[in-house]
Length: 314
Image (cartoon, rainbow, N blue to C red):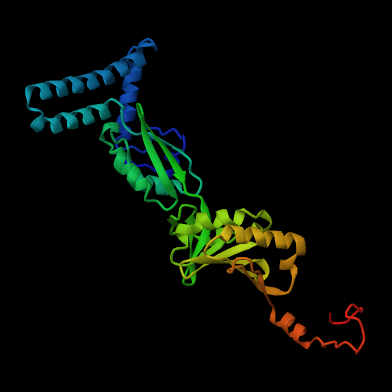
């Protein structure tokens, strides 16, 4: 037997080439061709007859051992006999069909399954293989089925990257459920928002749901920073920071969206919007804008001049 390679995966038919004993198999095939050919319809019937015969023998032996009370000592032997005989009759792994793979490499799947071509189908521990598949970085869920006589059908469900969790100077991919997708080159995912904070991965879905309640603001969203384990500071494009409250954050976010639609507040020369206090809307200017405001001359009204005159400080 040999270890399956990536050439044997994804609905690719595998031949006897590459098996140990391939020359013996070829000689046997030539000898069989010299024999008088049976009718074509008899061939599959004979093959399946032998296979079903082995299965029936195993089933009957198992029933006899159980009924006779000797199953405890002989069951392993019967199982081993069944596995060997089934393998001889062609009930052995030849190919793997893989469904649902996008990010996971075929080589990773084969490595986790650790199955050799020619391994008897009955010898496989599908539960252990599934558990190993689910340890792969991208795999959220996996299932494996035997498709008789010689095929393993593998379905995997991969995680969907939702954000980049900043850890020190690096980043780790996170899905919406907070699961970490480690050991992955994050360079291709630079477009995803960044989250910061010890508990940030577990709250990714909460943050994304909040941001998406205001689609116009969601287009500006680039990062979320947990503050004190209680609330979010939301960073927007152009460096504006929105300080959300610990409670009623969704309402505060929607209120900012309304002010932006009506007044274009985010287009001003500001660095932050503070929404932490209910009913209040505090804006901090950039240093340059603040300096400009401080340097504006104070216009005093001459005595007797109405306070509504143009250019006067009313």
